[in-house]
Length: 172
Image (cartoon, rainbow, N blue to C red; front, side, top):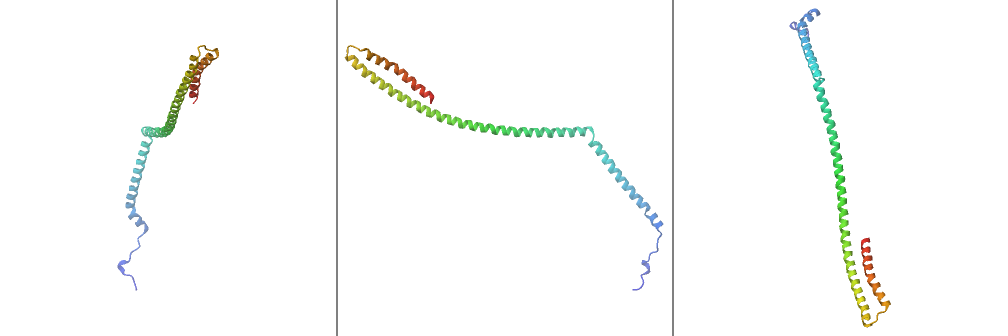
């Protein structure tokens, strides 16, 4: 523990000499930093000129227009889908209505057949009644005016009966 070795001992160097020693290195370093900065500034200015050039502005405007058209087309597509869904709903409703109308038509056809059978029975009954009324008339050689009026009433009432049945059918 004593003294420091003599070969590690430095002599003090004046500050002026230190500045002179680092001077050329520092000047090259500052020169390089200056070139890099100038390159960055030039590159940035070229980029800005290109960015704000007329062609670039036109391209940006076209891009905005395309985005607007795309948005409009999306809205129209959504609207078309909604209208298609509404049309499908209406078609389903129409199909259900057609089904109901067909069922009603079948019921009406069955009712018509029933009324036709009933009309046939009534016509047969009418014919039988007319036949019964004709028999006494042929037995009596003299016809009374009252019995001839009854036959005329029955003959007139047959078309009226058919007419009323037809009207009843139409009201169904």
